[in-house]
Length: 142
Image (cartoon, rainbow, N blue to C red; front, side, top):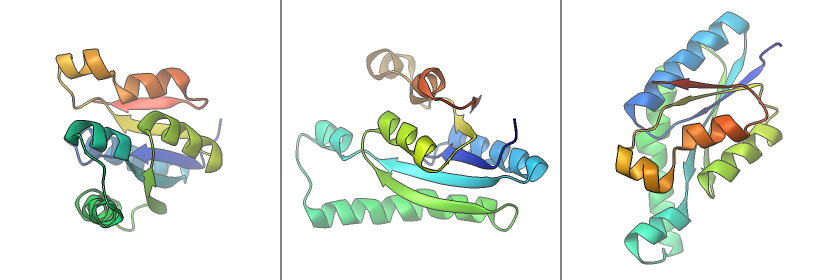
């Protein structure tokens, strides 16, 4: 199996940063490019806040995510390997699975959950669900 594109979902957490570093290592060894993404799940935000967002609030959230999460990834990757960066919208798992198909991903590398045991019990782990449903190999970095 040759690796040309590596999906790296990030959320600003320490495990996601470790996954990004691991993906850079793999990309350097294989000549692959990174597809670094973060997902804004407005449904989850609305659920937690008990309200809906105005278009201006959505734009502000996306700007903050880009600054807080993606800009850090750009700095981490720098010129070490080829990479693209995107803010995606939707439910996290289906959005990542769609990205795997649309971007012709060969491998997904992501950080283990940053949630505690209670949150994992009620919400589940994105890394675990992606690993069981993804059509390409998944590496989970702790």
